[in-house]
Length: 83
Image (cartoon, rainbow, N blue to C red):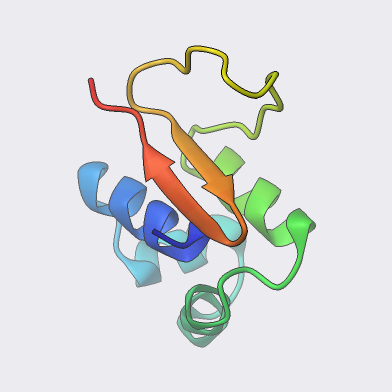
């Protein structure tokens, strides 16, 4: 799963659509669509979007136990830790 797919999954679980997210970030829905299509071209955009969805980006040692509901993004892909 790419980082954009992780954000889409979070949006879905929080029942937030692209228009709602755009309003929260004070950007256009088209800007959100482009961010998701481009798999977040900048770290700043990923951080901002995660914060807006009540998530945070955290670095932990490799192999560490991840909290339930977390996502691990590697090589523009992510895996979700099951609850």
